[in-house]
Length: 252
Image (cartoon, rainbow, N blue to C red):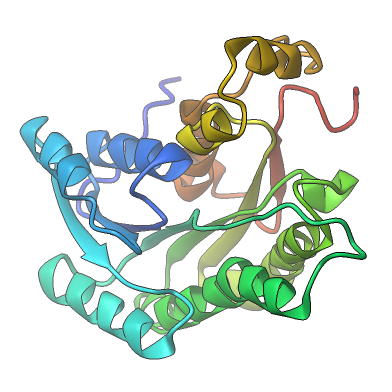
């Protein structure tokens, strides 16, 4: 049996798609035939040019997912240029490092607003068109810290745990109407942000040594999980949180 996926004729929206796991997902979706909208707070013109040069279809759409009006404008442009998204991946997220006693209410709200409220606003705007079509697939990117804690602080872990609650509820409400909702929970992924936090190669090697798989995850590892869950290959998978962690969560 062939396991290739085919998204020909489908529009995919990747929120937070300009770099890291999101950018890798955009490339894979385009390679599989989807028309891809790359949404982020900053333009992703270079990534879209790369996709188009490889024969794919992609547009860059800027927007702030914490602002309902800008979320609506983002979707309106995607719908006009590519059609309503049948595939949606929300990979956007922020974090910061605070102990619980030093965590301010303002910082709690800032992280919650992007990671949880932003995802809520995006999904709520996407679902009506999926309901009219009677089909759709949604993947929200959480984190393994929703299971084990950490990741910078209570605000980040709580925001990602909230995403799992959202996925669990939406899967129950929307699956009977043809819409699947799942989550991907990455652990330590070798992204630009990770390298900013650990600029020394020796530090990165020390982190990798703590992972049972004996390596850091790659953006492609996370993107593979997203693409699988978005695809018909996962047609019987709904409400699932897929760990992409090299065994780190349960075998530390």
